[in-house]
Image (cartoon, rainbow, N blue to C red):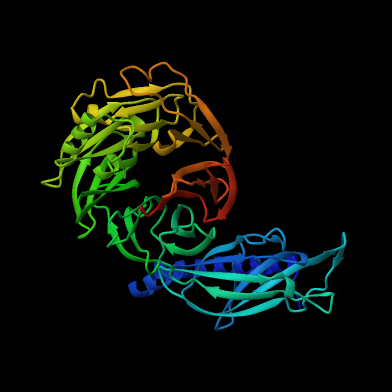
Length: 533
């Protein structure tokens, strides 16, 4: 028998009432002193595993079928059913062709689960321009999954739908669903998106545009970065809500380590820098404590705490000096100055949103310690930055100003802070992220409102040359709702935009300047990262 929406609502309300009553009883027991500490820990830790449910559409479909999915329940081995559908969904075979949709993301008790049950409201088929209702299966649809949900881990299930095999005898809707578990997939074509309100990271296969896996992290993951060493690939996630850094092993898509940030609060921005070929450091901007934690990526030890401005939210590091090879924008003398500097020091740039400045940390390569902190004033509410080493510049996005701040790296190297910052005017407000593309002589500005990418061309270098000129706008690209983060891929062909308001990732073709695909991710996505070449 197929349950109606009222049946499901009534049953869920009954379950909520039972849950509330049970919580009241447990509370009484707690205050009477009858519950042991071990039992309390066991009860508080029951709902600590995640399930992500995705549906993969057919590569091609000849039948035009639409169905309304009312509920999806996961059934444990003891017969208990729990709803895992986020909300009712209308699915069309042509609309989902070659695509993937997120059906649900739930926190569930640890344990063994054996089936998924699907409840439909209606299904129709369109032939020769006519819509015909299909009879629904009397007991809905069930598929075996045999899944083990384990503590502090995410289990991702992929539902494959063969639309052309989903109608029997011409009138009965019999959905041909099959299930696939996530399989670890190590590839240079993987991209990682942190989902703040889902407490996890979506792993996206760039080539197919599909979710390859989901990794459970700490609470409120925001900033995300990847290691630079090819022999030790890691993904680092700053968990603002649990004051920690999750270390993901990309060969297994599992958490390898959880680093507690001892000297800071609310870690948000994160970046990886290399002092030498075998020494990598993590730089973590702690928004709640106005400092930066420096962490050794080999020992996972927090080496030092560096005081910066108020509310540091983003951090970037000078890339390897090899990126200066073949630059068209710097003189031979400038390149020599930067290379000589990099033999002794590494610059780390920290955006301080509430003090309207950028802290430049000068790291001593010999000692692995910060030897000096320079402060550069920028415009109102700086929020993001990007290092353009080919030009010797750092671009700073100022959220509440229509001016883009430009830091001259050569001036910081010489210790000349007075002439280190200039501006590009009239770029507009609410710029929330920025990416430089020196290969094509462009800068991409991500605007939160409206959701769009603005493409501008930077100006020639020179004292005062950026002070009053208007930026030449080369194009506008609409994206999703409330975009948060922008990334240029390793090959320089595509742009990826994390859309916080629409819970997805926009894939932009840089040549056509159009959104070619959206990928569903978790709730309130925040950061995005990919491994370098």
